[in-house]
Image (cartoon, rainbow, N blue to C red; front, side):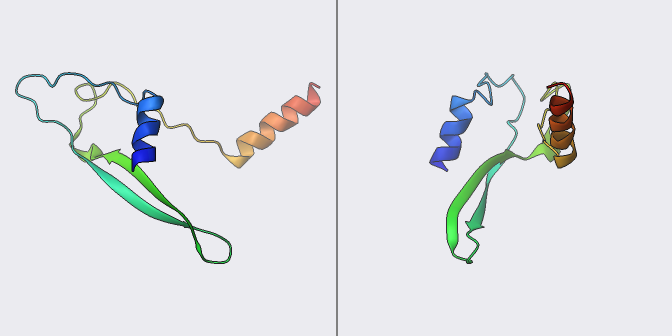
Length: 86
């Protein structure tokens, strides 16, 4: 949990602002997951801090969302273009 929190702070994931009068803060929770090695033994413990998004409203609680995702087809396309154009 400490590593995840430090990563959030380091990357400026969130801005800490004052809560407007009469508003309730959006809740959050920790999600925990085990990562395993190929032999089935535990590799590491992972923790993520996530907001309870079902209670937030666009335009009030947030302006935009962005979740970068790289798909294998996109990577193949970029490599093909790079190869073609040297």
